[in-house]
Amino acid sequence: MGRRVIDPGALDAIATALRPRLGHRVERDAPIAPLTTYRLGGPAGVLAHLTAPEDLAAVAEARAGHPEVPLVVVGRGSNLVVADEGFPGIVVVLGGGFEAVEVGETSVCAGGAVPLPVLARRAAALGRTGLEFYVGIPGSVGGAVRMNAGGHGRQTAEVLVSAVVADLAGTGRPVARDPASLDLGYRHSDLRPDEVVTGADFVVSPDDPTACEARLAEIVRWRREHQPGGANAGSVFRNPEGDSAGRIIEAAGLKGLRVGGAVVSEKHANFIQADAGATAADVAALLRTVRSRVAEATGILLTPELHWLGAGGWDAEDPT
Image 1 (cartoon, rainbow, N blue to C red):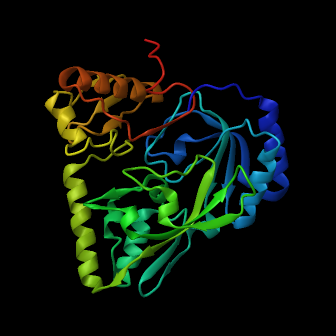
Image 2: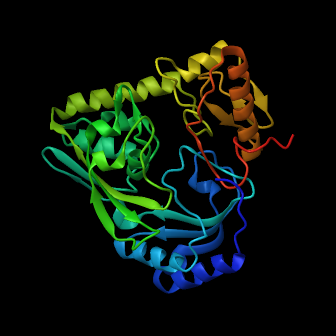
């Protein structure tokens, strides 16, 4: 999201309107970095923790008089870089009642805040197969629907039965939507930033719990062997059709390339690590450099899979 000037008075008014209904669960100028896997970036203008459906309506109503104030939903923050200056808008985080999981014979119903590895393990423990691929994705159910998250040859569109979505630019009332209405594609849906996935139903099949657990263990083993730990946000670029972004970046000789505290992983070239002292600006500058050098070497313009929150980012002019 690019730079926009937001009246602090509008943020004050929104926070004031929310406090009678959310209490201590709404904050002004609250840190966002702890909500992301990079642990980088400045504060949110307003941070609202929502735990029940009525909280959605409260946010929609509070924002109705200030539609110019941007709003985003942050799940596990596993594909997000927050600008060092922060985000002068509303950040919504789900919890509480949005963390429930119900496992049926052929379906699993999960709240939008449920971590994907938890969803995979709950289903597997009860002998339900189909969601094992989620164990290696450090996102939430809501994020999985929004980004059509996938891995190990599977993606959300293949297992999603329906999603419940609330429009926080409207009434905030949750409405069921089928996959066709979401326009799911490669790491894509038609959901706007101010639409929040409050829950989803997934299709599963009965299976031997031992077999399910074995598949989980194999995915975890593969991830640990091939992908780095530490502070990162997973894959930086989308894979071009028929190729791998990691292979392309490695072939360009960019493993280990560094800008400030950000470095291209030596273990997997499509990961950017944030070392101690790194800034969001370091990550953005390194991403721009990698994209530029790959384009020069191959003619391929890689598309970022990461999302930038706040002013600047990889599509802004490099101030250096």
